[in-house]
Length: 126
Image 1 (cartoon, rainbow, N blue to C red):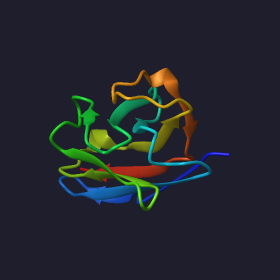
Image 2 (image 1 turned 135 degrees about the horizontal axis):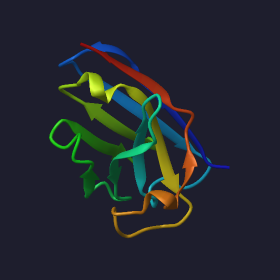
Image 3 (image 1 turned 180 degrees about the vertical axis):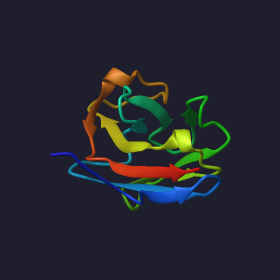
């Protein structure tokens, strides 16, 4: 059974930084792409970033490009999301996710993400 456990959320002032972590277990981590999503109160869940199984390629939502960085450590079965220059509109519950299929591309449809963590709350005060 695939398990994803996020950590690292919290309260931060606008302009600050946080690093989220997502520890994976239950299967071979290194061959699957990983993604981060977020959901703000009253809004639909949205894609934030994804990283290829190898860690060599990533892509980002336009709203976070240049401020957030996704990375992974396959030896530690962990994916990270470094968030800099945080804005109040980044306030949301952040989820990591992965797929049940192996993809050679990082551009994976949102609907292909089958496994989800429980989420970690990020609150950015103005």
